[in-house]
Length: 251
Image 1 (tube, rainbow, N blue to C red):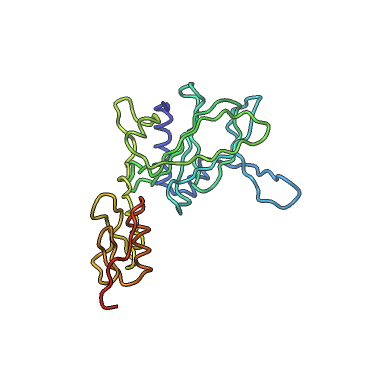
Image 2: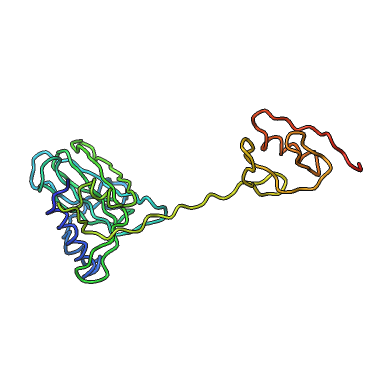
């Protein structure tokens, strides 16, 4: 369970960001950081934040958060990092979803929660939790640990299972409504460009009423061409039934 102090800290930071604006918030909360040039070849400057608190053994971690909905970027995101099974020994890192947080950490086992939020619209209001992800990672490599945390749609059950609720079960966030399932488009139908539901067990798809001079001996459906009859045999009787032509009228 995430320490309630850290949850309160995260909510307080989110509310502060809403009040003063994200640009000023990042300047105030993160402070000045000396840039580190990685190579003589021109490359983007990496601004790495040191959260090691002076520990002798440290490692770098590059953490990004992947939204469960496609196309969402630059949403306010907060990482809650807590040393595994050590309540209260942790911190909160603000970032933007779609970017990477470059951190320097004391070598240890970390529980990490990723919160994608909508900032509250009123002073002191609850933020809306849009995405929730988590990871357990032992960070102790000489090379930078690259960690990508995917999120899920937040529900009350998920929030409680991750440990973001209070001791009484209350949640310090507003939760979005469940996603609406999209109906799958109907496949092409036989002879008409539309696929229609089965009219009887064992026949997955049947043609709507059709006129024609060629009749299926299995189900008595009529078709205007042999090609339509072949499509019908393939789709309407896939389990071994066979269509034969037994009726011609005025050919």
